Image (cartoon, rainbow, N blue to C red; front, side, top):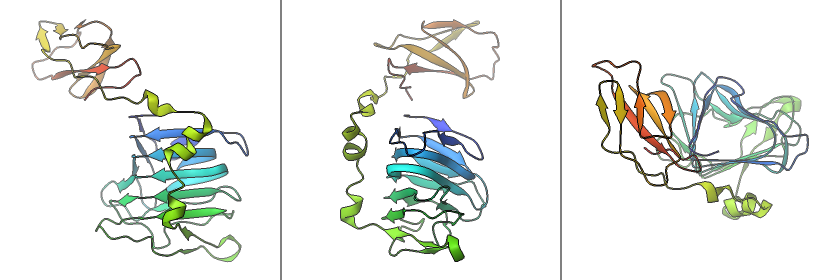
Length: 252
């Protein structure tokens, strides 16, 4: 998944892999929003260069289930939240023996003191490396005691050598899959966009698969042509056109 925005409150992204699965999902340069366990399920996931947006008080980002060899891996990501909400948690273990790691994370809001939350299961690995708070300070300096009683566990702080194992090549490419070959520099945005009466036109962009039309920033339609007839033309409306490549990448 590339250049996408996933929006919900709970269970935004269900990683629906079978129990004990080594299936793998990859997300790059995207945004995921939610409040409660908004990434959950089984298998392995690798989320890279992306943003997590907490939308409610005391958010739990992950609820990892029966993960595979790698589990949930978040690398070079940012965590932010809507204004005024209380601190968030990296996640809580949905299933026994699960794994989740956060590497090189930039926080734009406060995290709870334990960084993680407990549930009814115990994780095999809940770890982090080089977590930087909103003031620019590294706060992943020691493991945290999380929860109490039978659900208590101690989180881990990875060494630099351990963190270095979590790379695209070692997790994704080594599986025989290389989705980054489909990630490309967006094509140019159409120029010479003109509205004449009800007809919107623009210059063609080489190698474009099609075009998306927006009215006042909202999606209004799509076409493979360089002209479209509009049904709702107002003097205050602003129309923009974005190019779509053969692989689905959208221009600015």
